[in-house]
Length: 430
Ligand code: C2O
Ligand code: CU
Ligand code: CU
Image 1 (tube, helix red, strand yellow):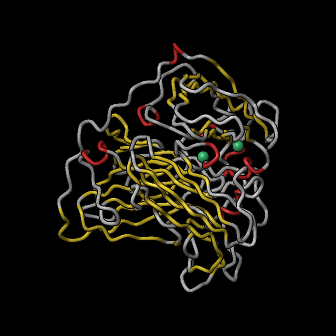
Image 2 (cartoon, rainbow, N blue to C red):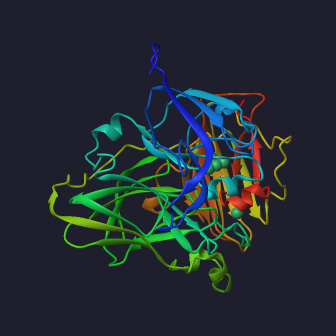
């Protein structure tokens, strides 16, 4: 922190090697290390400044996924950092406490850069997350989990061959950089901040014994109240914070087959990996656990965005590698919302492939799904939503604070191969 109160961070993207599989060394990329990156933490109201050095042999970028940030500091495909070059990004954090993340966004190579290991969490704290009675000792009962799937050749090299229609689909689940992860837990309950950091794989997460857990936060922060669940679905880029009781017996977090084939054609489902199951993380309780707070009845107040006052309605059709029949063009601005207005966006996947929809700069609210209010798990702040084939989502989005006539924000499918193939568009906030 400098005299003006700005907190400075430095990140260096570089190549190295990691032991992902026990006893084998794999060439990987990371920030300030050989794989993944440090968890960054900042408070609402705090000014942050990043100095980012690219020590990789390829140009990259660093995007703050879920963050409300000026467009020129967003780290999208226009903020390229050449090998050996430095980029600086700075803003004042102004959004609810949440589990966000950062990752590369170079147009056409995002999938490979993330797959090779470039990703980290960015936690935002505020008075509400400070005050809420949830497990919050980082690394003890508040645990970050970055879940990714990878494939390895016999000698332990990351396999980048044979992408499927939804990108690189791995057969090994890597959690926080290791395969076959387990975690000793010293408390009654634990809060897991889960990021689906995979290229294309969708997870239907639950415990092997079907124990109930509570969803307490989605992409953009705390829900209004804990939601009891036995499964939570995360498409690429989405986050979920859950609280689960682990005292007594081991709790095995698993990826389970999606009950409804994730809304896909039964015949296609296997090819998209949604019927696979994997062990993700074994939570091992201690014999004398420390007590945990009882779950609060309510968590946060979420003021609904008012769609009736929406200045503009837009619609988005997702199909093939296109949005509204067009592929990404770095020189085309698709539209320009006006600052301090609320818009309603209708998003529909008219494909038989899975897609999701991510918007930069804002956290949105789901107004309805095929005309019905969203389930409680999807009723909080979101920046990425899974859009199964044929289903119509209406989103309310409010653009605030930052305008820029030159630098756009992105919206795109967060299945990273689809994004790289051009399933992305750009908007200016004016
Ligand atoms: Cu997580 Cu446009 O990205
Ligand atoms: Cu993003
Ligand atoms: Cu897609």
